[in-house]
Image (tube, one colour):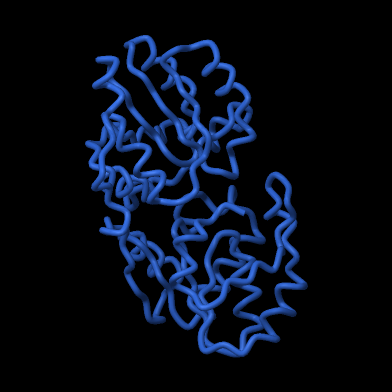
Length: 274
């Protein structure tokens, strides 16, 4: 539902959506794994590229594929969270994938932690985040600050609803940050992920009441999003992991891909102190 079709169409000969995820909030929790296994068994492929999370998906692919499977994780589950939080099913699936995949793709130095944890010996590819000329903004519109003389900050990506547990998701709850910035008369603009945009009632309420907080519609597609945010003054990376159950290994070895979107939009970046 929320991938950039214009990005993927030139890359692949064919894109088939098998509709294995119900069209509902957190529909991925009710994945049709039986049909996924049936589809994989029927495919004549040279290679399967299976992505976490959830880990049960690449596990089913590995179990049913008739060709090598590459296990790819932008954020591997047990790097980000403790095994207790991830849950036994997903922990077991992740371990199975590392033990049975033909190779892995990773993005940062977290692989050293994973090599020790799973005694990895399979081939691996370090595929880092980077800026690409395809998404660099070259035709700039005037910045909002040029019109109103005020400072405008922007954040794009994951936003946790306020009713989610602060211990589990507090690092991505930005309501208090929005209030703090507004007290300093700094405009704060948020572009949430598409799958979260309908689940943010308290953010919407604050945006109605506070002239310095702006909750925008989700924009699918790097080109369009970068063009839009280039009109602001600063990009923000303000996740605060203090008081959460996120493992130190995650913030210590990773960086949000939004950083590179900000750079492609020619924005300086304000980064939180942890």
